[in-house]
Length: 358
Image (cartoon, rainbow, N blue to C red):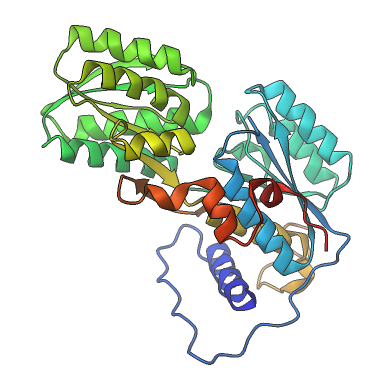
């Protein structure tokens, strides 16, 4: 773990120095290189991960990575959030965490505007802030880690269009108002339009993560266009409803969603869902903890700039890509949360989500 941490820290430093540059990947350390030692925080430091719809399985492996890094660093980690899809309630949870005066908070804003003022207030209080998966770019947050939502949309478009032979009809489902979801759908449609002129883009239906609305949307469009070839949506819940409609229609509609859970994985293995775009959640969590720690400890480095002398934050990473994968029948078994929890060294999912206290 110490060797892994040393490599991760090197990557984080390079991301800071070369933001916006196409820097070559660092070479792997030579075999037999000395192990890193002494990179530890204080056990009193606390770092919180705050999310919305906290029961969604997507967040669990993210926190697992966050917790593993916290353990390596010797600091406390906590998982929390609001169980609802509600911006006001996520802000309430954020404020409750802030009242504990933590060292750092890793948050996924339900909307950019909702968390802007709370993040600004937290940073004035001296709490380091990083965002993940979705962002609040005007808040002044120090770090943003995600798989590029533009890349997700373009990757999904090219995968589906290529499988269709570059011809046919595709519709999309949307969760309007959630920034990262809107970007995925907008990019998907723009990529199809720009790169696949023989594919017709059909309806773009708001389903708001409701499986029943997704089912009805696909059934309605398919009645009008019986040769509908594919449907893409930016999250998992709509994927379940769309897959139910595709199965009933039996016309070979490809259903491609983002993110996975047990139901989605079971449906992929059963051939009911064609595939799912899934960010590398472990990297997202691990790098979130490591970069927050670096931002909280400017005494660990001395960069060649005037920032420290002017009281500015030196560790800023406007964007770090945690990469993504496409989950198919062949790879689905790697993504079950309960199996991953055991592989990661936890007793079960509940143990994986528990606080870590050195």
